[in-house]
Image (cartoon, rainbow, N blue to C red; front, side, top):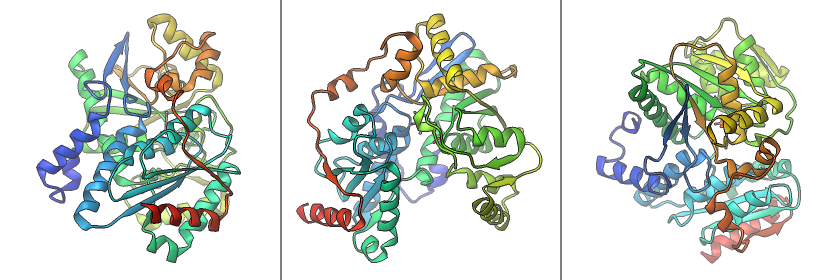
Length: 403
Ligand SMILES: *Cc1c(COP(=O)(O)O)cnc(C)c1O
C-alpha cells in the first residue's frame, strides 16, 4: 500500500525495514488485532507506545524522518504545542532518533497527570518538554509566533508533525484494508462498514482514501461527540463552526478539522479554485453549505450519556472495556440502520488512559495497563517557562547548543 504512494523514492529493502522497525514497538503480535464481539468487530489501534491510534502513524513518521535526514544530511527540530495526546505520540515517534530534536509545549497543570507523565518521563536527550505558564491557546499563539519568525524558523530547521502530514494519513490507510480483510475472512461477506471516532478528520480521511483505492468498504460511519461540526455536515450539508465543549472523549473535542479541506477537494470534483472559494467563505462567515449527499458516509453523534451507556453495555455483554472515544463510535454505529455487512469499529485508545470516564461508566476504575502503572515511578523531566516567543526561542537555542 505504501509503495503505491512512495514509488521508487525509497528502495524496497529500506521501506520494509522502516515498516518493521515502526511496528516492532507495538505490543500485539498482529500489531492491530481485530476482535469479534457478536455482530461487531473491534480493530484495536492502540497497542503502540502511547496506547492510542496516533502511534500507528507517528512511529512510521519518526523512522521515515530519520531515514530521509540520514540521506540528505539535514537536521530537523520539531516544535509543537499540545493539549495532551498528540504531543506524547509525537515524542515517542522521534525519541532517540538521530538528526532530530523535539520540543513540546503543554499548559502546566492543565493536562492530566498521566498525559504529562507520558511526555515528560521520556529520558532521551533529544526530547524537550516545556510546561508553559499559561493555557493551550497561549502555547498555540507562541508556536505561531515562532513559525512566523522566518529567520529563526529557517536557521534552526524547525518543522511540525501536525495531522495534515501526508505520511501520517498514508500509514493509516493500510489498516482499513487489513481490518476489512480480517472481518471478511471471518464472515465471508464481500464488504464491511467502518465506524470511526472522529476529531480532526485525519483517521476517517485515510478510510476515504482506502475506499477510493478499492478497499471493500461499503460506507464509513463518522462518529463525533457533542463537538459535532462534522456529523452535522454529513447529515445536513452545512459546515458551521460552533464552540468547543469539553467531553469524556477529549481527543475529539475540536470544531474545525484540519483534513477536511482535502475531502472537500474530492467532493467538489477536484476543483482547487472552488475549495479555495469555500474555505475563504468559511473563514469569513464561519459557515458554508454544500448541496447533495455523499453516500460514502453515514454520520452521527454520541453524547456523554450515549458514551457512558455504550461502555456499560459492552462491558455487561462481553466483559470488554471500551475507551470513551471508541464508545462514541460503537454507540453511533449501533444507532444507525444495519447495512447487511459486518461493522468494524476502530478502537482508538486503551481504556486505561481514561480512567475517569471508565469509573463514571462502570462504578470503579477497572481498566489498567502495566505501561501506564510503570510511569508512576519515573521522574519528570521538563522545564517550566513563560509562553513568550523570545523565552522559548532562547531555550531552543540553549538545548541545541548542548547537543
Ligand atoms: C486523535 C484521536 C481521535 C481523533 O482522530 P482524528 O484523526 O483527529 O479524527 C480519536 N480518538 C483518539 C483516542 C485520538 O487520540
